[in-house]
Length: 368
Image 1 (tube, rainbow, N blue to C red):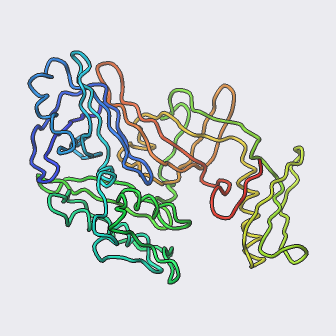
Image 2: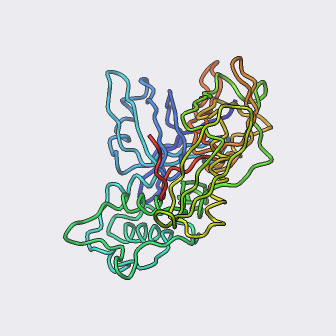
Image 3: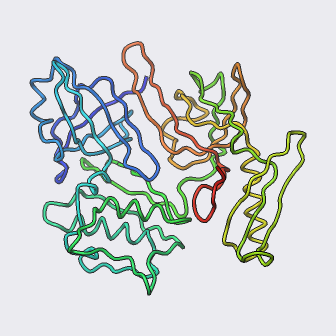
């Protein structure tokens, strides 16, 4: 069984307050373009002796160590007694930005932004937040660059001193830009201190992992949540591009496969017919995948060690369940770890989405 340790430290200085908090009922994990979360309960036997350390919610950090390797870190936000129990809640370091505001406007001269890389805006947000007195969490942001842009000469991306913007919301807006970026958090030891890092991926995190596999009977446990929903299924896609009336570009991509014909209309503003054909074909291929796998419980296994998991990676999953068989590629968008306790083994629940999925944003209009 994996060896876990829960460490409490000062948020700003990194000073270790306790090297091994006696926590039970622990659940934690990272997520894509979000801070991730941590939930646990302080052992009642030690509540009185240790609760003073947990009184400084918002000023302390909880670190999770698995087999001597840091796997999660975040700020303690809540420790509320429930009788003899003391539940504690924490979130990743980016949750801090949701408690901070741009008091100077334009991030104190870093903006306004015209044709700016949203990756740079996120770096500027963290730089601004940590430059303010008592605001330095020691968070480092990757130097990744994207091809996306925010703000134009006519409509710059600006923030106003008169109406202070929440810094976390600015980061969320940058991550919502089409084909822009995704992000997640990591934490590692650097001597006796921790490196708290924001990992940026442009236009996305992760890569195709041929080295990891998940298979029924090997490392997949429980009952995977497989949904067969034909509401979004289609073998024929009508791609509509730019223009109006008879001048509008229209392409049809389809494939007969022995099933009842189902069609989907893809609204776009594409002016290039080749690009419109490519989008229509991709949409058709995505909509011909009927089963959808949203989450799955796994165990640590040589085929996919838990320490090898990365947010955003595409992994192959092969399932042979009582009601269905499944073989396909899915993206890991996050996971929740429940460390083993007593006779209960360690459990990890992966959050998943299709590697190839229908368009959801941009200029597409979904049919009712």
